[in-house]
Length: 324
Figure 1 (spheres, rainbow, N blue to C red):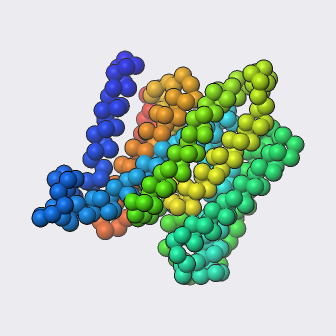
Figure 2 (cartoon, rainbow, N blue to C red):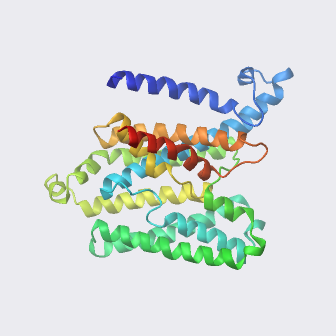
Figure 3 (cartoon, one colour):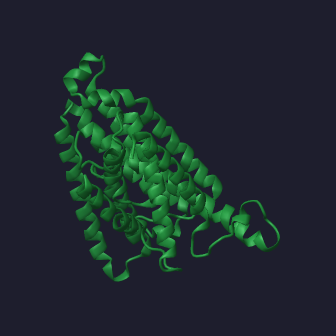
């Protein structure tokens, strides 16, 4: 298949999938529900516009954002194994949730208070990382090792707390460990979308600078910018965005690690900005399909979204590697 045909097929397939996703669920909806809100389509119309569309906005936003974050980490660290959760931010957020739920009766709080508390936990982790990076301009390897060390510490504390409360484990912490998609209303989903678009726009604006980082620090200096400062700004943007996402959905694995690899294998993007665009589209579609499957495989049971993304995408990724 030629280069242009590959993109045409991808765009048409993406449009068809996006159109079909809101109508797929434990309760299949009629396409007439899009514009008819009375009569036999009244219930379908309400389900579509009050539940399915806001959830789809959230899912597409999370999928696109995680894929772009994964792509940016892999480029900046020049490491194919880098992914959004490598620096320990999600572990810190999850630990904050489980500790609060165990010792401070988190379940009595409102969803807004819960999200604010988790954002605070993520910001604490981010400050650790930024202070370490800015303290003496340490190299990439040491930053990754420091983040992995935080990840190990937080994960150990997390399982220690889970062991403590193993006899009365709540569903909330389990959902956060494997990822879950909450039911938000339309205004909440749109606010979440706009905030993430702001972060993604910042990464897009830094696309050429990130391209310079891939050529090495010595070359980056000749372009007139400091690699350490650019990386510090990237850590700030990506950590803030990842903290926001994790505080809403928990840790959704696989997307940030593997989607950028699949994009490179299939499309061979020539720049960071093109990699971001295609990764965002593929990540959004992939998480959208995974979410539909999590709700329709065995209704009314809803499987953890992180489990579905791994089971669905793992064999696909292995097949692509085998073929290439």
